Length: 254
Image 1 (cartoon, rainbow, N blue to C red):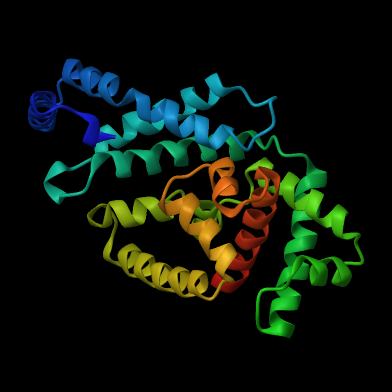
Image 2 (cartoon, helix red, strand yellow; image 1 turned 60 degrees about the horizontal axis):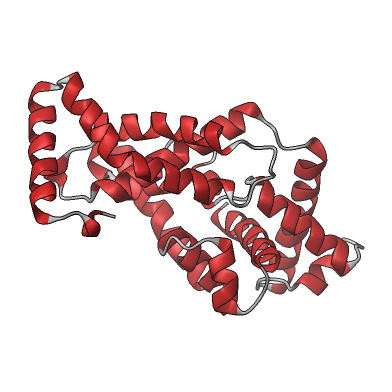
């Protein structure tokens, strides 16, 4: 988003960062929050796009605002990282943390997710590759349509997220570890590097379409609907692929 900032405005923002880091002036902090507030709307919209309508977008934005404030307080311009990248990870993490704390996902959805994930793990161990939908359905004695509907529901629920699978119970997301390596301890930095290597290896071993979904969603910032247009499939189908792929990655990382 910073590419759209005109040169004089960019210079002003850089000056605000210098002033804020030197003085911690609340007024300067408010100006930075106001300037970067569109990031909150962007991330809230992206996270909320796959969630049920019962989840209020305004609530997501409120959760994300805390992530933006935290990002501004923690960000170190001298490290050479782009603030927008760092902030988006913090905002998204704050939203997901709050959704997990509310535990709004029905138990039946979580139970189906555990059952399918166990089946995927068993088949990957047996086949030494990512199983197809047909193979998973047959292994779990489910109808193929039933399986795909369940995967779509799991994907929409938000419980199949790469950050959650990578970080587990930790509050530090994969994006944060990449964006702010200087802000964690040497032990955490080592663990983060090992996780990155394992993640890259696991992603590279995915089937082409699954790997493309992960890349477009997590690294290119595209929505599931936009990815569907690229692949020539429905948004619901992309949601299914994403959910199954996250289960596969989780099994491989564990």
